Image (cartoon, rainbow, N blue to C red; front, side, top):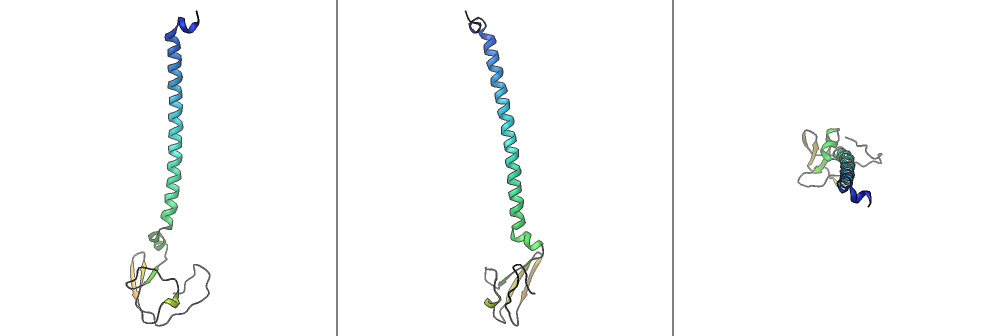
Length: 113
């Protein structure tokens, strides 16, 4: 007669312990994956926040539009002298009317005020 048949309770206990150990390892692995994923999501969220329009305004940039229009201006030649403009800043806005406009070949990110 085999050992397993002589001591079924011992065999059951061994397998039960193995199952418990496996479940514990799986739980630790899942928790580690969740922590890793949470850190990765937080990093992506931080990068998206840094690129948000409001955060860009906090760094000193502004957004200028023609009054009443939703699109930001990209080209000075799209504005005529005398048109009302709205410039959004981190804290408030400025309504202005240009007396003249000029275009220049400036490096990207450089604006003449």
